Image (cartoon, rainbow, N blue to C red; front, top):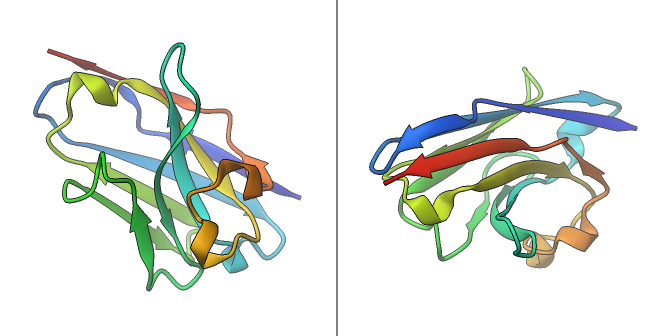
Length: 125
């Protein structure tokens, strides 16, 4: 069993930067790929970014590519997502996820086994 706890969300202004953290606990968590997803009101959950267990490979959604960085510190069992130049369209509940996901499907929410409770990010214009 793996538990995930997100932190770092809140209310920010357009153009600001934000770093979300996801602290993981449980057996062998460092062996799981981990991802960030988000869900805006009335919309489906969408992929944001993911990182492989070693941290050497990452994947980003087009909507955040070039202004986001996902990273992980396996010594702290923590995954980070930094988003720069935030826009109102980035407003959503952000979720951290972990699971035995193949590299080619890091974007697929159904392939993840464990989810955090989510954290709100609101970007004002």
